[in-house]
Length: 570
Ligand SMILES: NC(=O)c1ccc[n+]([C@@H]2O[C@H](COP(=O)([O-])OP(=O)(O)OC[C@H]3O[C@@H](n4cnc5c(N)ncnc54)[C@H](O)[C@@H]3O)[C@@H](O)[C@H]2O)c1
Ligand SMILES: O=C(O)[C@H](O)COP(=O)(O)O
Image (tube, rainbow, N blue to C red):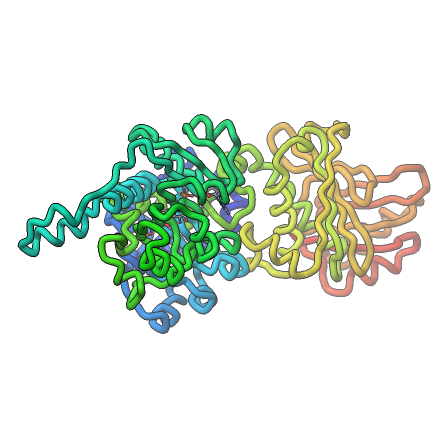
């Protein structure tokens, strides 16, 4: 990287390797309103592996900034073997991105899922490695909703079997007497993006709508014409049940022998969400024995399905091979959506749909960008001052910052705190998890009444070697100012090489430190003393033009009146 990009330096440092090579101009995403100078080295070095069939539109986007290799259907061992070469991996649901693949991805910065579900990605393992995982939360919503509706109608009119009958030369009208959906009750489990669109269309078809979604308000359900009910009532009253929920420990096997027993004998179940939400053996048994009417399934606990009792249910089961997102439109949408995010992350910009960066959405970043830099700098400083093992980090949001979403600031502070220990291995993705694993307790407090600056941050680290704090704020031009160290007021910009002393405020001490540094050929750029009372305790902050040579700290602490001395390198 040859030039910092506006204020996005913090984010750039998060993901980008140290650049080399000649600079060329490169323009990207106007939504971020920035122009980058990227090194040719970086451009030629970025490599993206596309391991599932992805629409060309996304590949074209990626090809502008990276070498794109499309290698679909690779076995796990081969993926593990080639992963070390790649900066980004783009997938659909076909590739199982296991911990082993992720760990093999030594250069990997981003995994892009061209679709919604990331259940084929070991997200915790990616987070642990600092790899951002993105998806396309909306690109295939309509496709999946329309597939669910098509499945409902196919099942109620036996279209697949009727078609098979005609194409094999029969004209059998008796066997395919169907039912209407008009005035029937549809139970929608999960009233999110897809469930909402299903509700809208089903309502227009004259269906009565029940919905179960513990995270949706009554107002939203009413807006969609749905009556929010509990799951039990939905199971008992619905003529059709359609699932639009993620597979989680709570939803796994939600439809099982016990819940099937509560349903109407004519009920038809549609699952275009995820395999594993239905106990397939129990479902097949319920259909075969006439306990329920039938099922239309697009997703299965094991894909490809292979041998299954579901294959032997005749016209009472309609099965498709995970086609919910398979429309031309959806594939273009998800491919572009995810390719743009991969491109952005490779360029050091934030991703708009990262599933594992807490609270770091582009809007939030845009507003907080200068404060993220402040938080990271203060975290880095207080970590170095505290030294040793950090037990807790107290982050106080002051003034205007007391009312902002603090998550990004906390992540930035932790990234700074851990940087001296982890260097490039810590980033916005894994800072939280790295801190947790080190047992660092994070305490957030807010004080809107502190108004020395519009907004300031106060970080206090308690560690095995002592407790230290730094406070900082931004000037009008977003320049960082350290405004207190260990509660002593100062007003200094952070610089690359700094020396802090805790000492007794007494004549001659500043001179002695100056001469000592001079004798080691260290030039002082600026110096400031902060004290609360005359001749009491004080702090001295020096910005140095050169790094402190080995051994000088020990000499400084020998000076009479100096209690402690610390170096900070930013
Ligand atoms: N078949 C396909 O090809 C295909 C395509 C796209 C999406 N999907 C799947 O469809 C599902 C829904 O996708 P979406 O985009 O609508 O997601 P979404 O996040 O917009 O909606 C999911 C809804 O489920 C609700 N929910 C979560 N846990 C619940 C629970 N225990 N009980 C009831 N409701 C619960 C949430 O509150 C949310 O409103 C996902 O599993 C997704 O992977 C499948
Ligand atoms: O979660 C999703 O987006 C769907 O399951 C689609 O999966 P696919 O991209 O493999 O079609």
